[in-house]
Amino acid sequence: MQSPTQFIIKPKGGRRYDNITKYGDIEFITSSSQEDHKVTNRYGIVIATPIGYEGEISPGDTLLVHHNVFKIYYDMKGREKSGPCHFRNDIFMVEPDQFFLYKKGDKWKTHSRYCFVRPMTNENCSIFNMNIENNNHLHLVGEVVYSNKELDSLGIKEGDIIGFQPHSEYEFKIEGEILYRMFTKNICIKI
Image: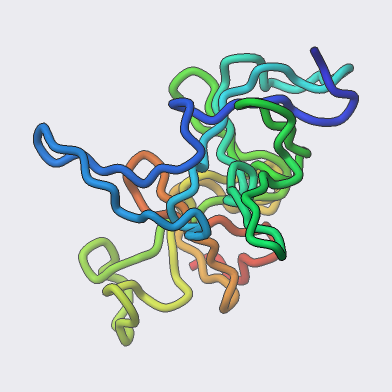
């Protein structure tokens, strides 16, 4: 089974939601709302790539997907519905612009025009004397964690400290760390 344009995936762990946290031997449900986008599963396992696809991604790789891919909705009559990515059972079809990173082996790589930035805090940034905003993060400053080809060609690489546009931070938890997904155009300055 292959699609002409879409990647066929299944949710990692067989669950649409990542709303269970384990403390010791006890599992706790951290959110019971299916409408809570913060607890939707963001990881999909590739079953098949599009017909004629010639990139690096192959079956078995992990994709970091948009929060709406696996989400369940309620229609106007209150009936539970799957979103437009759902094909059947636990199989979903995603367009190339619905995922942002892919994991090949044990290494994450960016896809398309996306990059990921680690927010800077007082603890990991001594070059600034700035006002601290929410959660002790420096406002509009970060470190490039996952670059892309376009940023590389502009001389911005992984590990560089950068400034970014306001409201461009789209938060993801990757490998237990909060990172911001951004577009190349959101990076304003290399510091």
